[in-house]
Length: 578
Image (tube, rainbow, N blue to C red; front, side, top):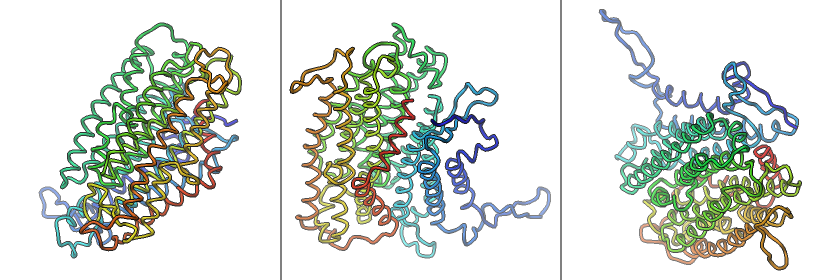
């Protein structure tokens, strides 16, 4: 078993235990300071003497480079990612420390905790942001000052630092969400990342679609955050604390009080927006369509995973060990939302001709798949001491599958958006004619995009197939557990199963529906003629090509050889449910 090491903020050893987060903070400071270094001077008051202070004025040849912020961002995120992966592979085993950060002088006030679960989610967030930062160096390509010939190049040069400051700020917010042991700290991290996301969606301010999508996303996101914060305040009014462990203890002794259930419902609205669950998803298609494709990929992967972390904390850690027998109180509600979300997302994607809107509705459907898995975890009350080991093992299995799906989704979903982002170099992507004849223009890129589509559809032997298979098998495993106290079983082919098995069946049916619109992309790429104005070779990009290659390796690699990642996800699931 892992032991718990308690440390105070900024104490000896704190920065060593949180090296990745320290690197992000240092990178953010460098991003603000280094591009402003120059030959600036200030005049001593009352004299004509001017002294150098090295800020502003004519920039030095190195600090004046317009591509410097991009390199700082990529190097910072890559360093943090390597540190996190090293922690996952070599440090966070069953014999080493988990680190808890508590208030100064009071170790009962928990602030942050580094566990296998939090480290896995941090690696997911930083990995997705690294791919976005890498591709953004091509999408918003910097140009030497002497070669600037148009407004677009001038815009790209002047907003390099702004773009990468937003990405690093988003990274700090997301890591805070992963580490948070207090719901207020989690909310602060959520909003820090959320505000950065709102600006990134509208970053193309010269495009009316970007501005419109960003405004819609901001308005709906602000409203949902307000509702969620109100639920948080009601929870504090009921329990007198927002610490996750204290709230779990209070919920385990809950009686007939109404206030905590109202608070739970309001917080579900807030997190429902973050994961694009129906009916809180209506801003998502416009936001995805208006944003630059790498940023849309960020919303579909890391931002969605961030919302799922919030749901994990609320539904699994706080409310699941409640003092009632049977299933979690939210089980039926979440199951209904999961069914509506996955079905609505796939049906809406069927009629979408815009590849980015199609992928947006696909993300809604994937949110439904994740919520179905989350529903299965809540079938058996893990706080009930009468449960046998089979129920615990089944819950851990489906949570492991859900975490695996969240991680590999970064590969094929982000990869699809990056391919579209490469085509955006030729102009805005408004319909599927953008992909017409891509096989004739770049056969390798068309095959890569088709692999991503097949993985999204769940075709073997790709990682999308393995993740969906594990989720479906996990749900069925939970439904088949023989628990005598359950009254929610139904007979299926002579077997007594919990009704949650129907969500697995619905996943299979919806996956079959999704094959149509994913394969339609393949038909357009391989059998249609290139659109007018898009019949030349695809623009050559170095950083985007590297990012797409990494996504392709992850899509195929984790499908063929996913055992190591599954083991990491299993350790994370055990740490979360412990």
